[in-house]
Length: 260
Ligand code: MF3
Ligand code: CO
Image: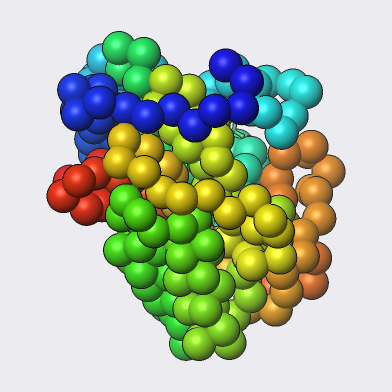
């Protein structure tokens, strides 16, 4: 496949939903286990075990995303505080009270993929981080509502970017959502920031399945790479939040496939 956007039948969407449901279950269990003292690697192990129990293959483990030349060595992305996305889960990274922990997980069942992310507040994180989480979650909800046939990709981007503005937080540049189904990353790219949309607007059609994943930070739109080659951090060190759902665009409206 070169450029085209995949359109999925209702039958295929039900198969994508199967993978998505496992993702949702795994993330729920992971969330219940995030406490001070747990390490990022513990989260990785929980996710691997729970996926295995459900007959699913972790979608990111040994996967080479289109934006990288090398394979990702883990099943989860665990991004803490100023880490925005693609945080490599490390044995040495101990979760502490006050942390914002984003966990991103994907699963494959019978050749179809699902992808979702949550941000968990560890104990009392303070008003600013609470606001950041609320804004990011609301942006995802509003973006999902725009995922209907006949709307434009720009309607999704606008829902996300304007929510960030409303809260006085920053929509991260260059990283965003994507088509998903037979592969984890398919066309189209779904930006979180208006600047990333450019002229690439497209009309949303029934049968499209997309992962929508707003990432906001308290201080900047810009990111830098951490020394590990994967972990993306905010340029100014301010905290970030990230929520993601896989959503099918159907005749009946948006179907959030990664919701329990
Ligand atoms: N949900 C993440 C994304 O869409 C998946 C990362 S794939 C990885 O960017 F291989 F980089 F982990
Ligand atoms: Co994704």
